[in-house]
Amino acid sequence: MENTAAKKVNILLSAYNGEQFIAQQIESLLAQDYPEITIHVRDDGSSDNTVQVVSRFVEDYPNVRLYRGENLGYRRSFAWLLANCTDADYYAYCDQDDIWMPDKISRAVKALERYDRETPAIYIGDFWWGDADCRPLRPNRNAFKEHTLVKYITTGDMNTFGFTEVFNEAAAAGVRSREPLDLCVHDQIIYLYCRCKGKVIWDVKPTACYRRYGENASPQELRGGSRLTHFFWRVKTFLFSSGRDLVYERFREFYEAYADILSPEQKEVFSLYINRGHCLKKALYRGKYRDKPSEDLMIRILFLIGRV
View 1 (tube, one colour):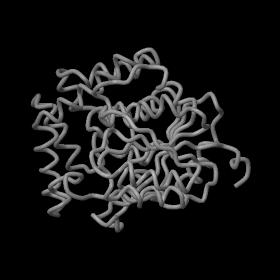
View 2: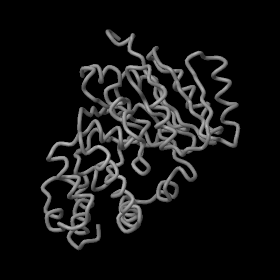
View 3: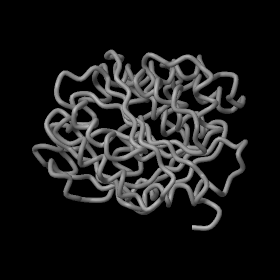
View 4: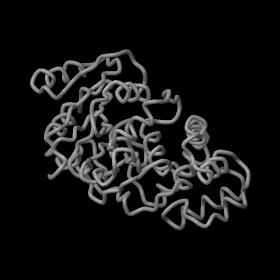
């Protein structure tokens, strides 16, 4: 790779009781074909053998570093990593139980190099949905979907999981300079910051496998089911429960903390969609709320009758 070998990447991994799979994850990080990476692992007060597992890698690899701390919860644990591991050009969030493809970081760096150092930019790779053994089942294909601020605020648009994100120092500095938020999640914050103030790059190639197991998977993912049952499960758990209200509160928190970076048009979008009301205007919105017409129609009906 030309002009990228000198660029340093910090991989930020928050761990908690992850002894079962964290070794596989770290092995996949060490197998990256990009040479300039440092793996920063913060243990968030684990009670199992996570620290011992990671310590073995620290002994054998100088680019693996371990920090032990009290239990802060994953939001503030990732915020700590971003605030304290600052000596890099690019940063990647990492969970403890997935597996990365060898070219994940090299593809991200190549894509991010399109933009200058002053432009906040984030790369979002596609991924495989995997089973409990992290065997790839199907690609998520998030790069083929339409992504807008309206769609993200309205439905959560959950294609921007932290493990898919690699971002530059301009983005990291913009988030690092502010107090951590209590509700809005680390991956949502960095994505929204770049969506509103910088650039977002979507990759069509899956570069990680997302392990789904136990409490880490929804009942639909564990039991299987048709597209129709998946749809009604999402409607029940997301739109007709407190889960929808939590999403509203997360975006409200971001809006209040980052209002100074938003354009007038972006402020208008936030103001409209983090508050109830304006039902007809929302129902008649010209863009997409969901990619599938049936799901898009359902959300419009729910707006129209004031359910969301």
